[in-house]
Figure 1 (tube, one colour):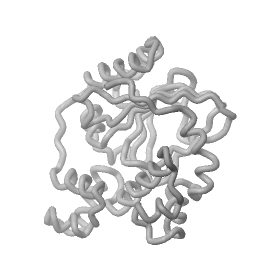
Figure 2 (cartoon, rainbow, N blue to C red):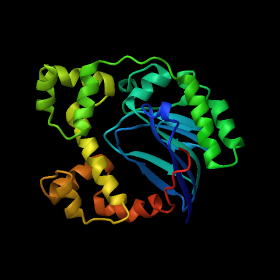
Figure 3 (cartoon, helix red, strand yellow):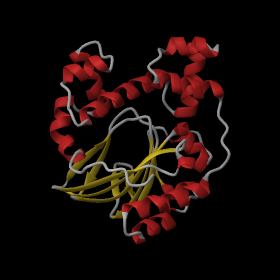
Figure 4 (cartoon, rainbow, N blue to C red):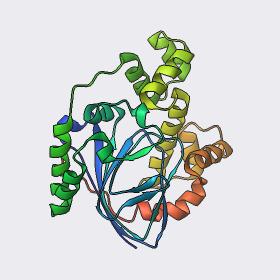
Length: 263
């Protein structure tokens, strides 16, 4: 297995819209890879080949928030850059709420974005730092004024902090039903489902850490009632138990060192 994985930060002006860039070049056995649920939308530009999903084969793509694993098949070689977009980034770059793309993956050219130019720029650049700079330049040109309901933005922040949905509804002065409807229209998932995804993401990050905790420690730290609850929720969102995912995916994920190169 030959895996190169380099992480960089976007330009400070873009950080409300993009949390990180991840460059990858991987040679492994042919197989499948699970794209896991998270609080980020996914923008991918390949430098070789395509990303092969049930919905099609993509040289560039943007995928919305989702509550189950996206299955990616590959021939053993993958090379490109992934950008983790915030929901606000979807509005800033493409003028649409994240809810328009919930559970869906489309080609980047569906948004009238300069997909071919962006791919060519990344292919021409010779270092990861240069590629991340090209992303800054192209994405920076796409930024437009953003308008979003204060209540739904607040609800997102409070969910990320682990606040219960009922408490958030009281804070914004809405019923739970109204909050759920407005939240889902903006993000594509209800607050309850998004809270599950955020908890899953926290658990996933713990398992990827340098000191891998036990599954019992992860379940307790992330608020699962017990190990059985942790296993059920992980299988629903990932398509495998934590133990199965660790065996199949963690060597692939950790095959390269994450090195911030673009500040």
